[in-house]
Length: 77
Image 1: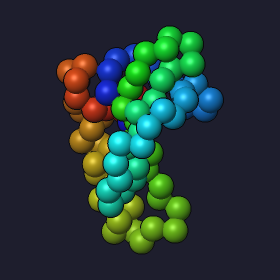
Image 2: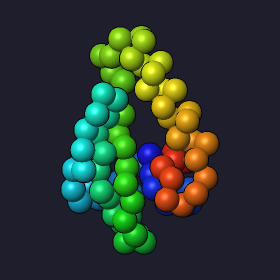
Image 3: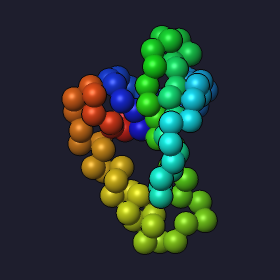
Image 4: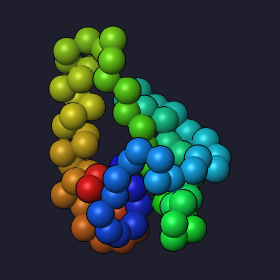
């Protein structure tokens, strides 16, 4: 998940700069785009080995964040 705008492809396009925090569903990182050098906030969500109800709650959070549209909102693209 990212704070900012544009299409995002995860694999290898960002460098993790600093761990910002962690919660029930994942870890938040400050990252930098390898090509643009712009900084974003990324939330990595790990669903492997999670109970079904936890997966549902995490996916509900992702669905909510996808609806955010302001560049300072968090969203998944």
